[in-house]
Image 1: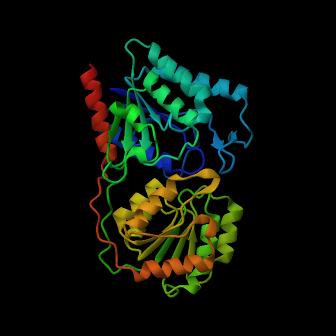
Image 2: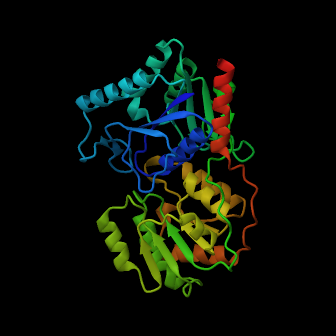
Image 3: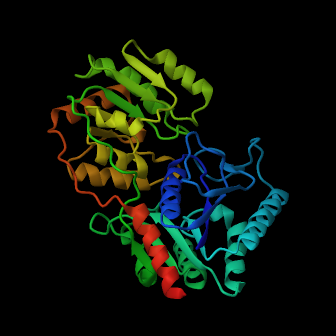
Length: 379
């Protein structure tokens, strides 16, 4: 069973980390897996033995996602697009996968239509034709234009056989953030959440505050606010740890280190991050898919400052769900100040410790099993 998995991260590394978990599950399920990677390598990445093909890398220039740049920070042009499209199509032609798995497209990654639409055309022309599957998280960024929604549906109806929704319909259905979900209901398959196995909870009493911002492409303001908020909270005598993420620019890291008072450690990356959460009394973070799953598994109290720049809605929706369930205190990103953050910390610490949650978190393995079953049925 040969599978080609197209993966492209643009700003943070959440999509990349989820793709790594899926890749490891695919390899464990017996798939000969090749990763078609369109972004730069990420610190500590682990593809579980899958082969990696590095396409010419691109990323977003800023949080608006309007401009794509290459590894030198230069805006990509038609020559770059042609080079990368050729590299992608030549690779899949050589691999001849039985399954083509796309991360997010056509729900997202619209900037890469220059290569993904030709890729779908290539798949449609093959005999036998590979199974084409899209992988998406449970909450999508809202698409306010009906034309864009119709475009997604048309692409799926024409070229995509199945859509893996990495969530639980009992928690939130795709309809909540994709209004045309009913039009493609026959292709939707909920897998449960894609998360690493839950770490063992610390046996000792919880202590300390962990402040994190995912990969760190955004979030310096949150870390600076946390450094200033500590002295204003009831946790001022506890150790605080600020984790910048590997993507945060060095000048921002230096500014955070300079602002950190005694008792506040600043680190770039912790391979044992999930274990740290298991021993923390409180986490302050954004509300990305991977981070929230780590928090629900590890069990600390939560203060969430959802990323909301440039019309991003996904994290705000996720944070609101957790707040409504009594599992988090929210500080809107636009309102972030040390004083408001400190007040949120105190509210979270005054609340009862969150109860352990039964979570359908084996979505990676479930996805691999579904793909194997679909391929077998097709054969």
